[in-house]
Image (cartoon, rainbow, N blue to C red; front, side, top):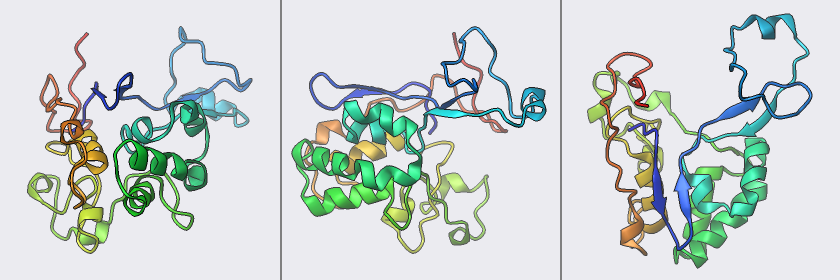
Length: 217
């Protein structure tokens, strides 16, 4: 399920919120003027200035994984670094949090880091999709397909399609459950931290692209 606002507590003093991805389109490297409009890909500004440079200021593929497992002081670096550098820079953060805070053993912590950060041979903060594993699954039937959805390729290494379902696929709960619960087969270490208790949007998803309903202000 796509959710526009998420927050939950993991440890005392830690408040987590869902973030959105953004790019700085100012070639000088300075912050974008918030009073100016954000241009779409087809904007003629890009076509008329092929030398325009971009600066990555934030990224988020696996929702809230970075906010949960990476030390706060490393968040800015995580936003700026290319995903291919994730295993080298942030695996220790994941292992430290999962062993010291979540009470997991090192092998489990390493496995979780490999899922969300990738490995040296296949690095990156990304959602995995295996298109050859869902023969016959369509947009109309994917909602009921157990092999389609976030982390299904981990739970079912040979049949999991991966990706994210539009409805009934609470990715934030799944990440919390991987850290503190039984999602990946290990005993729960903190059953009270396996959900953010936000089970649905304030409006139902649309049946056509882009699926998200108009926001409420």
